Image 1: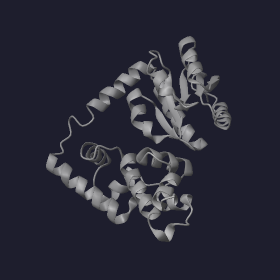
Image 2 (image 1 turned 120 degrees about the vertical axis):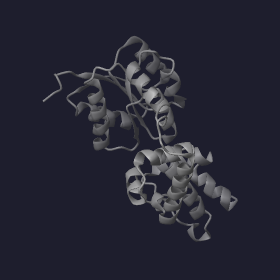
Image 3 (image 1 turned 30 degrees about the vertical axis):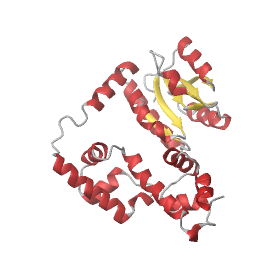
Image 4 (image 1 turned 30 degrees about the horizontal axis):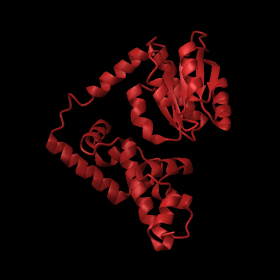
Amino acid sequence: MLRNMIKYSVLIVEDVYPAQELLKNFVSSRPELELKKIVATTKDLQEALNNDEFDLMLLDIHLKNKSSIEIIEEIENLPYIIFTTADIKFAHKALEIGAIDYLLKPFQKERFDEAIHKFLTIRENYTPFDMYRAIKKIEGDTKYKNSKLSEEKIDEYAKKIIEYVESTKAFKNPKISIQLITKDIGISPHNFSQVINQKLGKNFYEFINQYRIDEVKKLLNDPANQNKNLLDISCEAGFGSKSVFNSIFKEFEKISPSQYRKKIKGT
């Protein structure tokens, strides 16, 4: 049964044709959604947002080497946003903007449906995006305001978390989650997030991916692995996708994995 027979209009922001087609298929599979427009450039995005109204925007970040982030930060009346990108480094920015979800390419239909469910749940409350964004900002600002964790306890937990991750190499599990770690070490997920955020200045994905990148570098510097495929090395370090691995490695190291390998070989 449809939710009050309402169809929510969708704007797809994507410059790669196969990705456009995939998103079109995902949207068409949802009776609550109606595709209204597809744009592939920042110019078209700006025009669409200034001249039309949309309920939901599926937003890729890099459009013809330009960032869509710069455009949406200039627009006052935005639709709800779900990021659809291969670049993990804007996850923090997405939270600041008030995005409903951050889908990291390549993602499956189940993950898309999960994000749409979040959107529909929020829209059932008839909350305008600006109000939703303001609420999320307030929640972020006061997230740990009432925390009862002392500095000593934060230090203790930080040590416990680091020792666990390093001794078990939990980061090598591509499906590792906060819940899996906290279940083993007896710290609540909320306290875990607070500790790595306040003590280490990272979110969970940054925390885990730093270990994975360090592991990749360790493996690449091992002469025994000089002929091993980069994809095999990334999988061994815990990455579950080639595109995600390449994107995260370049973000952390400022060069691609293949460039790093050439650098250590001196070629």
